[in-house]
Image (tube, rainbow, N blue to C red; front, side, top):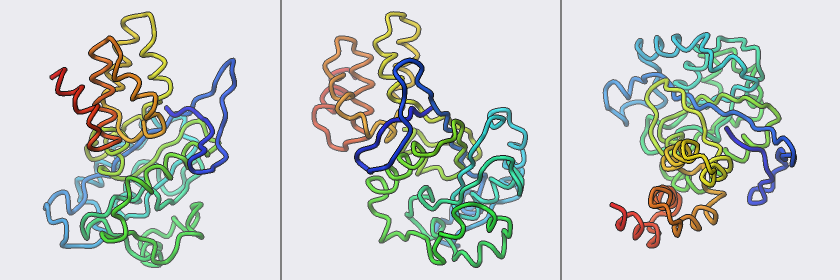
Amino acid sequence: TLQGRTCETHGCNVLKTTQTAPMRKRVLFVRHGEGEHNATGRWNSKRDPFLTAKGIAQASSLRGNTEFSDCQLLVVSPLSRAIQTALGAFGENPSCRVVLSALHSERCSARCDEGRPKSQLVADFPCIQRWQGFDTLPEHWTPTVSSDSCWRKDRVPAFLAWLRAQPERCIVAVGHGAFFGSILGWHPDNCEVAELVDVSQVLCQLRDTQPEIQLRAVKSFEKVGLAAADFVDDVRKLLSDPDPSIRGAAARVLGRNQEGNVEAEAVVAEIE
């Protein structure tokens, strides 16, 4: 889940919580099904590879998934394997709003992560021209290995800010393993459904007086990746927490958000 709040860093107008009963939104990440590059391990052999037969079956198996029953917004990466997965899971005419967004296309590290021109995409998937975001997607929209070196610093925060800015309370994003993995703190499998951790809620639960709630919070918190980027100062304070499990979790989270953080590395070394 993701709590609505003001994002000053990106200057976006996002949902604000009330003091009495803050409304939270649920965000689910769905990695695409098995792609041709996943099956062969040949990352540079083909630009924008399609799903394999296995990948198509994986996507189709998501159809009717109860996790998606309350979905109000479906956001899809313009890479073909993500579009195919969304079509397999939701069909060509989902009942919710659908947005095509290049913000969460895969981090570009090889030819397989480069997308095709919009005209080629719509020739293969005509239904996407009905999706919001299609009209504003440039013909040559794709990042490249050379242009995408700052994807963690630029695209990840922009995507999280965009999610917070949407009015829908339940969002499903179909995308990619490395991009989603950087946010989650772990790499999802093909067609795995992963819920985005509400970091602000978990930070509160770490102070809960009920041990079982605190323990669940620690286990959830210690896996978090760049989802905690806006909470680095709060996380840093936990490095001096008397509870070693909380100190260790904070150090690991901080390490994922600030590579080379000496203080966090020292805490991890002390605990391990």
